[in-house]
Image (tube, rainbow, N blue to C red; front, side):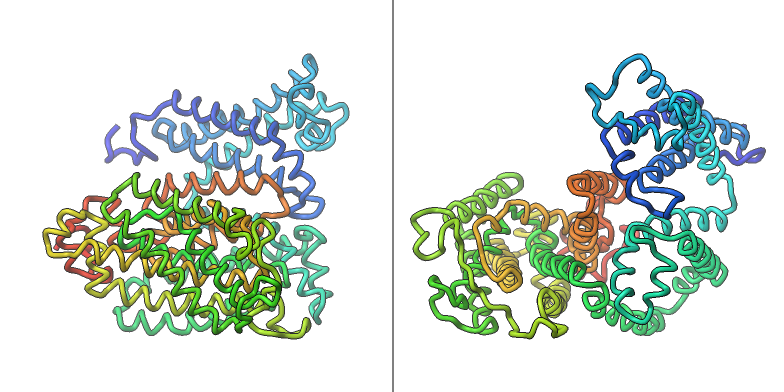
Length: 576
């Protein structure tokens, strides 16, 4: 079949074998969601009261996604695409039907604890006995698969509206509690009870969410906002961003005040990781030096502030927080020099191992009896006063002040990093990241340039540690966790190496989401891992990559060019 007679959905070499493979994958996913406990446990967490739960939504989204995927692998033709979605969805739901039938002959719960009556109740909509409703998952799976295949064939606007509504229902239903709680204490308490249940949305709230989402998607598509922005001259586009930036800033400033203490603590943690991510973004994102001992500099900054400000027995000066912070930053930078000197000639995996060892050394020293008289050993250093002394009722009480302090520090560091990135030193870092040998041949002093990267990154990590000590009010060896380093590295990589906005997005994605999903206990780390895999699969260059970072993933960037241009002047399409 030629392109002149029909427009294939995908390449014509796909066929029914691929559709059956997709259906088998869908069945495996449905089994995993059911037997690992996600469906029965999350079945108790409503998204829309008395309508759908989070556990049910996980199966709904699986069926739709499998139908979509099968349609893109089907032979050419509208009928084939719909039939492929139907078959794949039937296989997905049919697997659960077979599971229920098998349970009649084999007691599955003896080796699969989550194959419980709660699971059968969800799958059959409380049909009694459950085996009488075993056909329901297969029929619903077929319908969802057909709907997913139909999404592929729908007009673009209709497809966007439906997908946006599904996402909005999931997101708003999950985080309805964050919005409902502060509304209950104000004049909008009545509206909050109408729109939000104790968990999730009410039916009215769900309807309003769907209507608003539909209107918003249609308006954006009708006005062709994206195309108009792209056609704008650069100067006009930059000016049009200013009002949006002001609104975003006001929203960021309002967040901890409007969403309560739990959200304030979560946002303060995100702000701290943004601050440290901006520091590692220089060491790793620009200079390409993988530092897995970043937590060591964090610990140096935190312990320095704790020692200088604590009013307990281990406090040595009882200085104010603002006087102690510069000493913490300088101490962390000094340790950056100590770490940098012996490993300047190491590259690649060996560099990561060496820095990882340095992080473990700091943790062992903090716990040791040798330094216990000064650092407190496992007991740590307590009685660290907050940066700003406030009354409990003040708006700067608790984590709020840490959030705003970290936000200001992150903004200053972002400005410094942005200026450095386009400077001669920043271009030298980028050249080292791409190819050290070529950079050295071009006249870049590797020792001096690497040392500056380590010192600046260490100083920013020390600043993050100093603020952390003020947040917790103490410093313990248990806080020197290698996961701090791993999280900061993941933030830089997932956000986009060398990208300042990418660090912010990466921190919100990797630190904020697990905090907001804390109600789901250990399952939040499952979501964390799945999200990380999806990002690495579909956005290997990062969520918001820099131009040079994106080019490095698409093709090899000439290090000579990388050394001579700033990130904002990067090549378009890899051609001069």
